[in-house]
Length: 281
Image 1 (cartoon, rainbow, N blue to C red):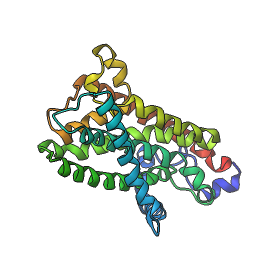
Image 2 (spheres, one colour):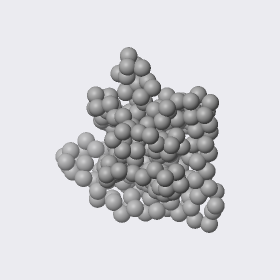
Image 3 (cartoon, rainbow, N blue to C red):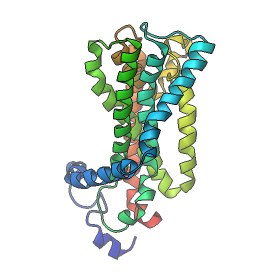
Image 4 (cartoon, rainbow, N blue to C red):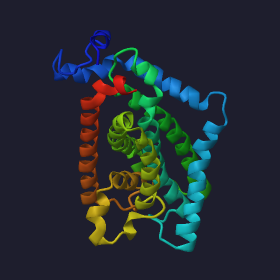
């Protein structure tokens, strides 16, 4: 990086300047920029368009219909907590689509904002984090659909629903770790953008979206729980369907450890490589 670029970007080297506590406080100092970028992404997605809203509604709804027919009708897999199979599937699809949308939106965010990255310094973590707000808007739309589906099927939530925000936060953390890692890798190796759809497609079938975790054999539980989305999906179902839905505590705690490790790895790699982003973009 040239000396001119370093002068133009004060604080571009995280090792030079204030201590670690100040570095951690920098993203908060740029919260207004975060809000502007997030609002821009949401406006581009939904303003004067029907496709954005249609995708947010039709993708999970049609996937729920297919999974209900394949797993519920043809394979005759059991539901959980006496819930109708479509409700169980949609409750599992909510956190999965939140995870997948954050991964997709964030991984391409730096490349899509190359002009901004090259002009001024700010904490680069803001860009993929703000891109995740679009996924949260889609999640809110899908949550309303789930509520309507539950009313249609005559299935009411219990007091467990008050804990749902905690699992929403956990779903965001579970997605941000891999998202930060793939975002940084995508800047250096542009073909990583082809890996994200594969991860999403593969993960959809190895996660308990169309089926219940209760059907997984006991001998596979350890390896199955290494999937960080498993605990999130089971937690969502526990909140939506009530205490009758299974939540394997040892597997859930193992999933929390995996989420924490991925978040640490993603942030560490992102911070270690962000000084080269402007030269690569």
